[in-house]
Image (cartoon, rainbow, N blue to C red; front, side, top):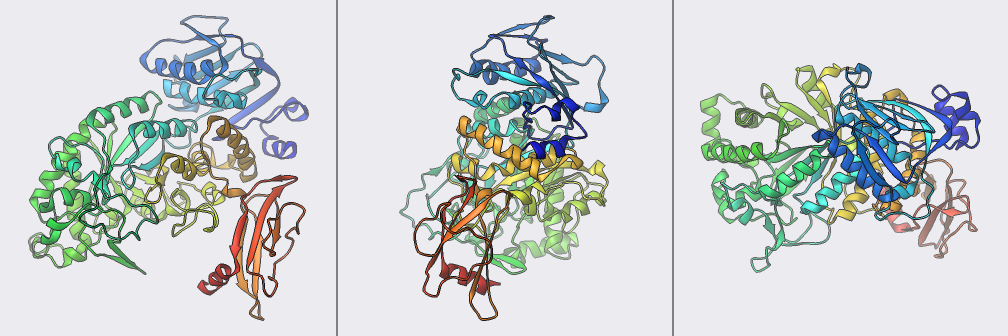
Length: 636
């Protein structure tokens, strides 16, 4: 660790910092722009005297200090506007410091005092977040910790974000999460300086937002038959099965969530996904569909409704709103009116992704629309729809955003694009002069598996921590003015509860946060993972769930020229040893250690593997039927 610390920070730390063996390197995620650590410590007194103004936004910061520093340390909190001997001084700059932008800060810890300077209260808050990460892990305890020496390292930090948009998308539609669970998700994300929560509020599986002018959206659209297993393969619900799973947020719930987020300097981006992904809306109001059979549709419970084919897809039932129906635009005007009133954030996300058009192709109303409007193909039909929706959004004083499919057929004049199918959609939109948020599947889809399918909830793709850490929202070929930032997306088809939502988000959420905040040149995988291991310990204290998948071996199966099964094992991080057995027993560090490719014994039926770091087991024990590995060789 000392060698890693020295190599990473040799240019930043003073000589005393990296020559003193007693100085333990700090582990702040995301990595600050500049950090200098000195020898020596600050000892927290029993009374936490804070010098601060008491503006509304600084009161939010003070409340956070009360709950996240004073409470766990058992300190009494006293706030004064002028206190030269203060423990902690929170200072807004009289003249803006251009080097730290709006959300940046300067944090100084000496043996006598802690000082945070910033241009805005959001910057002070970010300084507090870094300060908390410098405390001992017990600061994360849900209850006051006893017998802890509350010391801090002496540091000088100058820090500001690389991107203004640092988001996480939380799909509360496929599975419903309560208001308190959304707050819990916000609490976890702000630790790592995320400032944008994207709520996916409407889809085939449920409508989650009260629209008072359209009551059936929640009376009908918010409820479905409950199913458990692998989403997409459920049996279709029968008429007698109760539609008792779901829920929605009232106007009062949203107002409470918006305020809760505001007090943590987080904006909430609402998404209503149209014209595809609209089955819950159509089940509520069938007249919104081009297809007469929609009167028999119901909210999806996870049964197959799309035929995903190589190079394309077709809907098995029509889950799209009808662009040729004026009632659709009247409906959307009512929806967007209430959404705009509830969410103060400047953008409304209107989806636009994965819109199956095979039912449109058969619709006489669509054919008539195409003839009257001179539309050449179905992409232009969707573009016609998107442009009309953008006008509705703009009429409410908001900005229109959609997934990158809205580029197809022609982009609406002022649309912002969220690029999910890789970076190419974002690049194309930026070159057209449109604002872009990058959220590509290749780096930022948190619903993907984090390790081997044998130990992960099975889904069709994988995204390991190392790959997530490679995310860079700003391609070299693009004007940086148009890239607002990026986000990671947690779709919840196979996420049934908040504990699993945490498991899927962390530690990949650490990696994305550092990609969005820290300078590109400061990113270093080995140093990042050393910090990640320290934050695992903090999460253990906080009782936040995270995935240990990064410790699990990577398994590769192939065939030798003699048609024998060949198994190769590797690890995502350095310093791990892999132990294995073919004899059905449970390996530990006294079993054979993997050093080269394995050929299973002739009659063996399974391989068991586990990783160790020295004497300590790290990864999960994985049991692999050899027949499963043989199948993997056949798929290549």
